[in-house]
Image (cartoon, rainbow, N blue to C red):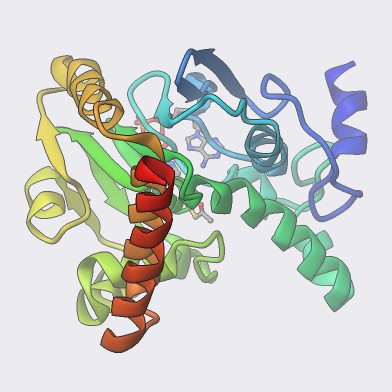
Length: 273
Ligand code: ACO
């Protein structure tokens, strides 16, 4: 049954359109203004498939309007071991193809499939929400990129980030290269990606990959505390500020000053107009 649904859900081999959280190995819960996405295949270290990315994209499309904070976390000892390694086998992931089928796909099909996968990551940057990756253990490849797609990363002291793609002959293509460069700078991003080395907790905080590091037993509380801080500020002001911050690198100082003015004018109208 799940297999039959997977046949319609896609990957490189078939047309990808939908995905419910359970089929993608996810749990999704909403509690008022807080949504929690849990990567929920701990026995496979939360390895991800196209069904995972379709399910993530579907969650983003249908996120309830009241949600202000989205937490992304992993069940078990790892955040995520990255892409399901069955993709490298000739058989691939049942119903979702393999890298062999990707290699055989025409350019337009490949691009469409990749955009569908990237959509699962991109919505986490929306100004209306703040996304938090709560990371314990390994966050490898596609898993590292999912943490990078979030606005904030709160990590346990056993965290191990690794951009493994180059070691496997691939490039990171799930939206991770831009935030990585923005967070750690170009030279460090090259070091991490071109060596595929592990980054542990102390270094992660030192180079800007994580905001907080806490003992593993304190991770949930640290996320809870951060959510309380985030929810204490004005929602619309937070969205406007996130728009400003995210646009800052692409603008000149003059353009950024003008953008600040435009956002503030809208705020003043909303508050006092
Ligand atoms: N895809 C599919 N299955 C996986 C993956 C994966 N990426 N990672 C782990 N598993 C499975 C293992 O095969 C094993 O399954 P089994 O119990 O049926 O044999 C189970 O998860 C547990 O794995 P262990 O290796 O025993 O777990 P451990 O905690 O010792 O190590 C670690 C975790 C470091 C994440 C290790 O599993 C690993 O290196 N996995 C592969 C990481 C990888 O190369 N990912 C691809 C990155 S590139 C990209 O994402 C595009």
